Image 1 (cartoon, rainbow, N blue to C red):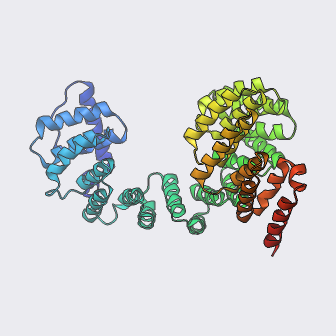
Image 2 (cartoon, rainbow, N blue to C red; image 1 turned 135 degrees about the vertical axis):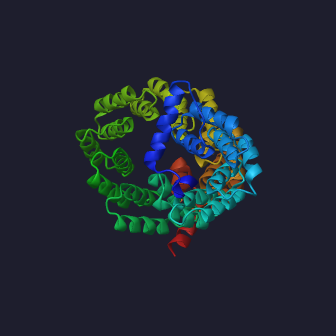
Length: 474
């Protein structure tokens, strides 16, 4: 990098240098190359991920230039090419206080980052910036920005990531990191303003439009997100991710006919992805066309047999048809492919419950607990299984465990209140009910639905509910 900025070699000369090296290597007649030349050659092979040739270059450097100041840099690059920071740092440290080569400090910065020494990495990158010509260091700003992200200094990260946009080799990734920083700072609106400015400056910048849509999506402004993705499609009618995002949002909004039209438009434009067939299948199933839905889930599997959503989609159709055994068969495929998807695991629990196989239900609840112990639904599901097993003591313990871990969750309080009434612990039931009402009055309807006859025929319970109804209407 440093040599390019010093006009050591232009692109044509670099091409000639690589061709000369390749010809000699092919004829097994490698001769002398300057240390400067080997430094450029090793960069070329690292960028092209040709690690065997990286090793050949480093051996030549060792043979001819072990006394050169560039030798340590070349050897460090060799180890950094395989992210072996422990060995790379040994060579870099030898030059650390004498080198005036910006390329050296770039490599030192990368090495220190791999060693999780992010503050030291920032110092090294900033030294490189000072040594480079003023027009040649924008790409280093991106690296500095990432290091600030890793130490959670997000304001500084945004500053440097923005500076790095000029020379960033992957603008989509850079935008993604800038958006993340804004959201880590809870400044989603600022992220939107930034990307609005980007699309104002460059109206055909697809990556900026996509990230603007993603920001709206993260703020759950779904209609606004769709608008941005539609702008993407206006620029590029073959943009796969835009179609996927639009179809996903439409399904979330229960606009299934719109999903069908969107995906069919994608298919007309020769855009096909397994997930599009899954979203299409989901929309078809929701509009009553289950046979076509299954057909599309199967197409997704034909395209990629590892598409968990397709197996889950077929399973959900079997769930609706009360074909629990078949649902479980397909859910097992989905869970194998997506073992951390708790939605699939909860549906599996429901299916085993309906078959009366409660031991299997508990097995999957254990899996959920390992993945998502702070999920309220987990403790409700435990309670339900134990109630069906007529083990009220364990049902209560499950709710108590949830309350201990999650705090005074109203959904859990309403349930332990009702169980207390069933256990004839009337005063305890009233206390739990009042606590639940004080936190979330709206949740009382679910409490009533547990047993309307019991609840609505108890004067004390009705009076307490009406008391909090009056408080909430003020």
